[in-house]
Amino acid sequence: SIARAAAAVAAGRADALVSAGPTGAALAASVVHLKRLRGVHRPAIAVLLPVPGKPTLMLDAGASTEVRPEHLVQFAYLGAAFMEAVHGIERPRVGLLSVGEEPGKGTPDVVAAHQRLAAGPLDFRGNVEGGDLTAGSCDVVVTDGFTGNVALKTMEGTVRTVVGAIRDAVRSGPVSSIGGLLIRGRLGALRRALDPNSAGGAILLGLRHVVVIAHGSSTAEGVAQAVRVAGRAVDEQVVDRTRAALEAGDALRSSPAGSVSGQP
Image 1: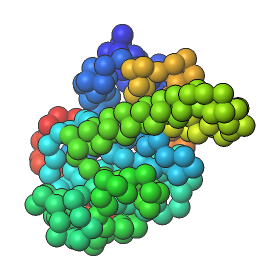
Image 2: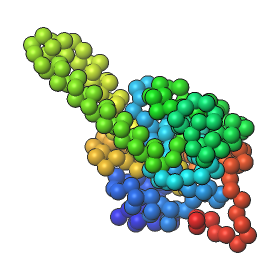
Image 3: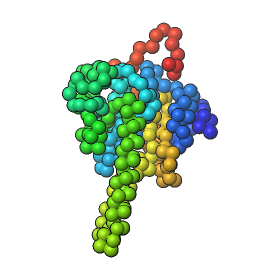
Image 4: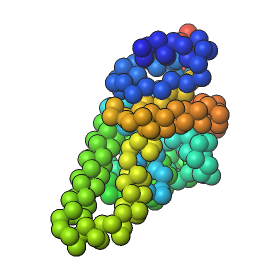
């Protein structure tokens, strides 16, 4: 069904693909049927982190576990264009996930990407560490798919643990229960803000069409929100705007003569 949906989008019978199925299947179907933007090395899974009141986009969250500096640079432009188009953030602040704030910290690929981003037109804030992901200091955080997926799953697990601990605490006795009733409204708002369903899912950037991948455990509201995200991305012309951002930043790869876009 995912492949058929992707084929329908490619044929113009639909404007976007939304899937809550296996991420790998959605990624494969999208690359085969919808193709990458010309000059894009690899698509990236971009996900909004569960940070209350501070929308922070992280990419890649699992599409490419091994990347080169030019891939990370493209991810930065893709993410910045998305946050500007869909979330209305003018000149999004971009950070590069690493093991230290100093420019020379990180793997050779991260250091090389840092140098290129620092010399480009983006509002690049340098390296950010794992503890800064939820600080709201950046609007876009760039990393490879392996690190991004581990960071995302760690955050989701931490949120579940914290929410569960709060729930158990307010149910631990009569006095705690009364206190829980007094702050029930605020706790409910916090739970909704931290709920992955509120984000709707991850968007696959770098393709010729809009693709949103909902969480495998999405509720009906989560799937509905994923559809809304896809609709907004189509309305705001995210594909065209990401392409324009890559061109403006001279971040598109040059295609060898005779190469076919969409192929490795």
